[in-house]
Image 1: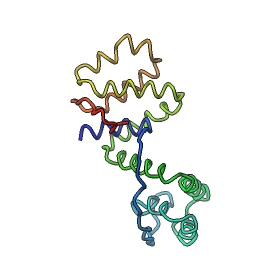
Image 2 (image 1 turned 90 degrees about the vertical axis):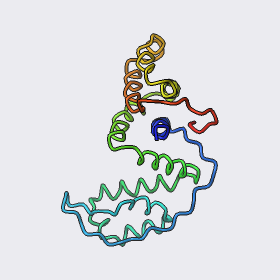
Image 3 (image 1 turned 180 degrees about the vertical axis):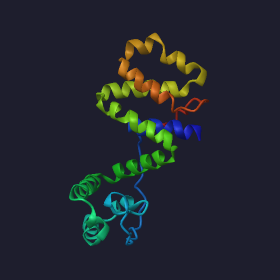
Length: 193
């Protein structure tokens, strides 16, 4: 479990998960009529609604949305956001979709608190240039692989102070709080790249 959490954090933040196989075929979703939600006038969607919708062909997606009273009750701006997300999804290659599904599964396996912490860190992470993200991820992997008792020393080290800006060190410190108290060295067979 600890290894899964460490790997999940690295994958979600870095987006460096390689997948070599074709994603499994997913059966089309079962579309059910769902009563509107009382809150904010929005329609409740069954869990996994978007996941099922995105597995349909673009024509089927449009047909489901056109025939869904719940979708039709959504504000036009929200309908357009859903359509835009589906357009982006449909433009992905099968390998990109598989990578996304795996990251999504890992993210969903984290606790609600861990998810919230990652969501808070992610905007800062995305603002960094690609080369700085790579350097930060390298430092995170090093931090992840060291014993818990050595992490604070590493975070306070002159090496990190010289190599990273205060903002970058802050991101690394917050990521370190997501690591389990005990950490085992990562295997070197590529499972965490």
